[in-house]
Image (cartoon, rainbow, N blue to C red; front, side):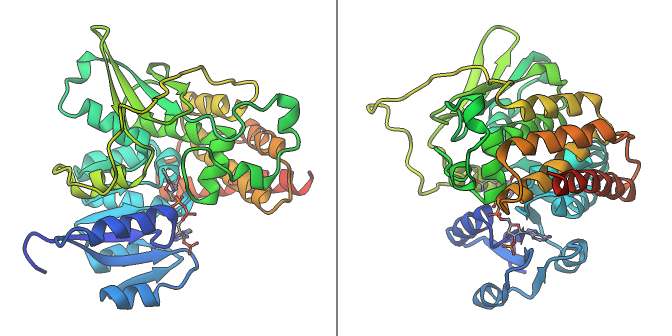
Length: 362
Ligand SMILES: NC(=O)c1ccc[n+]([C@@H]2O[C@H](COP(=O)([O-])OP(=O)(O)OC[C@H]3O[C@@H](n4cnc5c(N)ncnc54)[C@H](OP(=O)(O)O)[C@@H]3O)[C@@H](O)[C@H]2O)c1
């Protein structure tokens, strides 16, 4: 290994985040991919192009991480499948660039405990959390009043409750400001994504739920905002482009240059904010409640949502059923805290079973 080269395990290499991460890595001679993983797409060609020996398609990713011994893990897997890799990096004190929010939501306290034991860096890739990380950097936590997560509002921001009964998959996949993988795009349409992000922010920044606000900000120019006790607030602004937070996480603390243009302040800029409508987008509130209850409720929220979103994408259920399936599963699980990964996997499986049963009956 050449001195000064950062060796990166890129998990979820074939996805939206994974592909953009490869672009960032290619722009820097001292960033190198040492391991690649995907869920089902073959990686032979990509591995051959880059001379990567450690490659895995599906399955438990911890063996790949043990074998490749990365300096940084970029977890860009979608869904609970990323949980083992997140816990591995946190436990081993290996820097973790985390796009896979579902793993932090599901693992919660287990992940935080592993992070404390491992003592490594946890760098959020989610643009909102990257923004908050930057606004908080080096500031005394005592001075922080609250965090504000911004949501674009998704493609259905202006649709009535009645309209939402019949929206199609294609409409849900047409996100107004971000271009992303299908699961997170549907989560953005239901606002479940913001619910997952709320729980993610709670664990990342160690603040209670009543000090984390969500506001709808349609232009997605302000990515996050920290309110301080003196009445001031710091915001992070820029074009909605994931290459910025990916680059921030991969090159932290250097903040290297990217090809993303800065904001043109001579052009019209919309800085409108509005409260989220919890009646039309109840998954945000369900996530907040699951987060407040703690234990494995967030894990169950995530699992049921994954099942429901997959069913919606397969056109087996309609848009409103996503909420109904998650609500139902949450009402039936016991939410008991997980003491280890096996407990967590069981809680995830239980919620998936409940959600799948309900899906089948729709
Ligand atoms: N896209 C964004 O702009 C964005 C923004 C913020 C946060 N995120 C988060 O980043 C994560 C990835 O999102 P995405 O939009 O990039 O999703 P995506 O385009 O659907 O890509 C998902 C990636 O995960 C891989 N994968 C799926 N199951 C796997 C498994 N069991 N083991 C290993 N790899 C697996 C997929 O491989 P295959 O191609 O083989 O299926 C693919 O490479 C999600 O947690 C999302 O919430 C994304």
